[in-house]
Length: 287
Image (tube, rainbow, N blue to C red):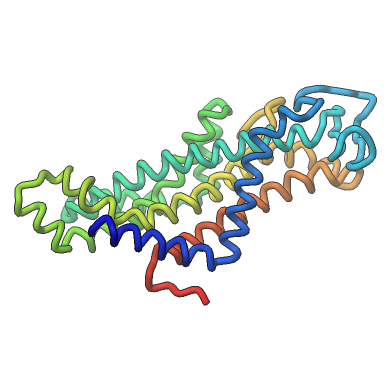
């Protein structure tokens, strides 16, 4: 593909993406959430660990604390921002690891096929037989809770679907003329996979990456809500929900605010993934 045709393809994909209104809204929300979570705490007079027992359970919009305070008098807005850093950071880090593992396994299985491909994909199928949340909880119970362990555990339970997507794509691409020509000119298997096949398989990988961020945020929330994930005093949206469950009637904003943040983030990533899927597939036409 020439540079000119690549440029036209990018413009066409961007045009299709812009016509997907929910994807544009989702992308804008993701950008705003990221800016608020990573830059916002510097503008606040309170940090997420500052305790003011005289301001316990202050409701939103009733004083100096814009979104109120929690059971220890800590500022909810500051904790939401710092919790967003943790939850979004886990989402992106786990996505990157899961995409790397899934892409590697899928490329090898799809390119080589035969016994190697069958063995790898049967291993993937065996892991997929276990419900993700139960597998994640079982693994979380065996390791010390923390940020790094949470990222690794979520990535370890999220790469299998990526592997299946990539394997199916590579099986089709390996028979294309450019791949056959590269092999006939003596290119190594690794070069064919990385230089010829992987760039042409990026569209579904990009979509899977976007959806995997949403999945990772949800999984972190599940595990932290159940007490196996990020541990206090470090804030995450999941453990904020866990701490708020006994105050649902007396201080409902403690659960509503992180719940809204999780819903916004996950829904926005899903909308963005839908838009990327439609934009990167020229057969899709958004009216």
